[in-house]
Length: 295
Length: 162
Image (cartoon, rainbow over all chains, first blue to last red; front, side, top):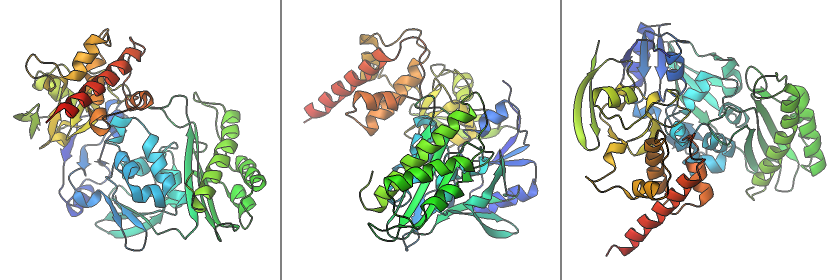
């Protein structure tokens, strides 16, 4: 393995960071934890002339309550920090679950939330949970700030709507309504340091504790070039009571919404089978959390 | 062009000029001569390069040296007190948890932070805790025994403190 030669700047503020990106547009990469970027630099897949390291910018790190039950999360927040945050575990559990398993303990101490989303691998584990919890990304450049819904952010493998001179400044979540729950599950060959074969994230909001489903989001990972919603599953369960029968039907319907490929981690047929299993499990756990008993 | 890097390694403050593309593991090994930290895969998959950075176990092959500026690093060389091995090191020796020794520095440093986070782990928690450290020789069993034994010895020491 080689290594690309580049310069590194470590700006102390977001303003400095976006100025660097603007000045070197197209030739600079943002680096936070670098757990995927360093690999790509070693293999010379990416060849930037400059790395803008955001690891010194305190404003980009941490989890803040917005005062209304929602959260604002800095992109340089590590997976370990996400996994340990009680507010994320209770209010947006799917995100905490995704962050708590990926990579290894060492990777989780460096890999960041913004990095996972902006790197945009089809297997990016925090993307589907962000989508089902209706997260929004704030993108900032010298040209201004804009908000992008998580579901519109990733467009393909390694592709997002982020322009090269933009930084993801925060990922925001509004509070979910009462009687909401979410869950994330993945299947992999090994228990750690493994890429997701198939993942499912579900979020359910009930009308009332024993009431029917008011809102539902199901999002699948690693079964398409980007995370995909499962509209068939959602339509099957919306406005219905979350009985075993209805959850079974929703899980079965999810299979039609994805187009997985055969690759060295699994055949498409295996992924289709897993979609049904993981959607079923995450729906059940999301409903249990929505009813107030964590599962 | 090289940039100034200041970091504290095993309690010793260093000032170095490093090229921006250098990684922490390279600087530790080549510039500071601390070759206890090993390069296994170079891509963050094996954990052989694990060091402790500001109290957290990280893969030093994935940390740019300049990102460690102003921070504290502990390598395997920083664990023993002179000739006195750290209880984890002693336990690895006592239990035969070292064969070729290549995974050992990273394994011990990760076990060290694991026990700081959780001084009384179950076997399952130890196994999950070292899931980022691969060993090709031992099959892990002796390593897990050693970590559990060291944890017990260290808890005993804590309990005996006045």
